Image 1: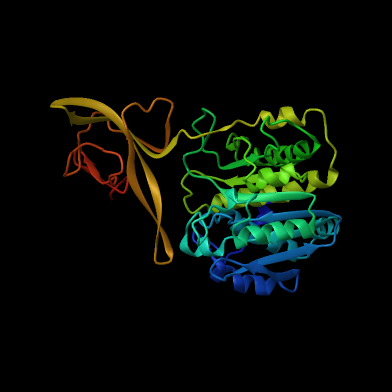
Image 2: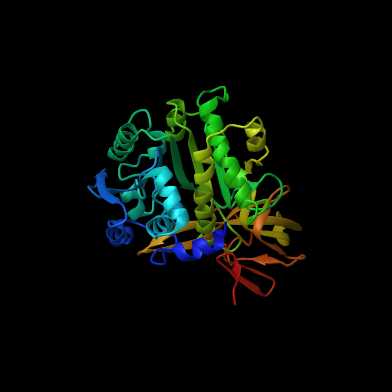
Amino acid sequence: MDYEKIFAGAKQEKLSGRYLCNTHIEPILESLSTAGHVSVLGHSVLGKNIFGFRIGQGETKILAWSQMHGNESTCTKALFDFFNFLSAESELQRKILSEYTFQFIPILNPDGAEAYTRVNANGVDLNRDAQDLSQPESIVLRRVYDSFQPQYCFNMHDQRTIFGVAETGKPATVSFLAPSFNTEREYNDVRINAMQVINRMNTTLQQFIPGQVGRFDDGFNINCVGDTFQFLGTPTILFEAGHYPGDYAREMTRRYIFFALLSACEPVHENVIVNNEIEQYLNIPQNNPNLFDFVYKNIKINYESSEIITNFAAQYKEELVGKTVKFNAFVVKMGDLTDCFGHSEIDGEGAKYSDGAENIPLPDQPADFFLDNREYHNGSLKS
C-alpha cells in the first residue's frame, strides 16, 4: 500500500498547526455531510456543539474520539485527513466502507479546545471522569458508546515532547497502549484483540519512523475512559501523537497517525489472534520521560564563589496568545543530565553562562541567556 500517495491525496489542507477548535472544523463537516452523517451528539459545559461524523455500512463498528483534552489536536487533524480518504471514491475506500462502520467524535471537549486547555470549562479532566460521568462531555461519549456498541474504540491523544523510546534518545513520535482491564494487568481476548491492531500499526510505522514508536504505561485506573471501555469488554486502543524532530506543529506526526488509522482497518477485520500477539506487543519499547527540548552541556557558571562546569535543560511551555499557540522555553533542570537527551543539544565547550540576573540557569526562569558572546533567546541561538 502506498501510504504516502494516499495521504497526499487525502490531507485536509484547511487544518494545520496546534490550535484547533469548532470554528475550524464546522465548515469542513458541512462539506462532508454528503459523504456521511454529520450530527450534533450533545453539548459542552458552555453549550458548544459536540459533533459526530458517521460513515460506512460494515459489520465491524469502530468508535473514535479526539481532543478529549482540548490542547491535543494532532489526532484531530489526522482524523479529518482520514475523513477525506473515506469520502473520496477509490477501490480501497469502497472496501473499507463495506466492512466497517465508523462513528467519529473529532472534538469531544470543544470548550477546552477553544481555551487550549487540557481540562473542560469546569476544570475537569474528562479522562478521569469515566465512572462519575459528572460532565456533559463525558455523558455524551458514554451515551454514544452505549448506543453504537462498537467492536473497537480508538482513544486519541497527544503526548508531550518529554517522551522518548526507552533509552534510545529517539522521540516517541507515536505511542500506543492496549489499556489494562484490571489492577493485575492481565490479558484476555479483549485486550489481546487491541494488541493485535497495535502490532499491525507498529509494523507499518516502522517502515517510516523506525525506532520511534513507543508503548504507553499500562497502570490500571478505572476512572480513565480507555480502561473503563476495556473493562466493559470492548478492545480499546490509546493513540498518543508525539514529537517528530523539528515538528512542533506536528504536521509530520499527523501523517503517521493517518498511516496508523489506515493500517488498523486490516487487522480489525481479520480478527484472528495469533500466539505471539502479546510478545510482539511487549517488544514495543516503553515510553520514557527522558527528553528535553533543549540540553546545554559543559557550561561554565559561577557557583558559590567558584567556577564550575555544569549542564542544564530547557523545556517549551505552550501558551495561547490570541488564536496562536506560542512556544516559550523555560529552564527546568540544572546539573546531572545523565541518561537524558535533548531534541536540540548544544555543547558549550566551557562557554560562560550569563543572563543579566543571577547568572545561573535556575528552574522556571525564561531560557534567555548568553554563552560567551552568543545570545540565546527562547532556548535557541538568536540569529
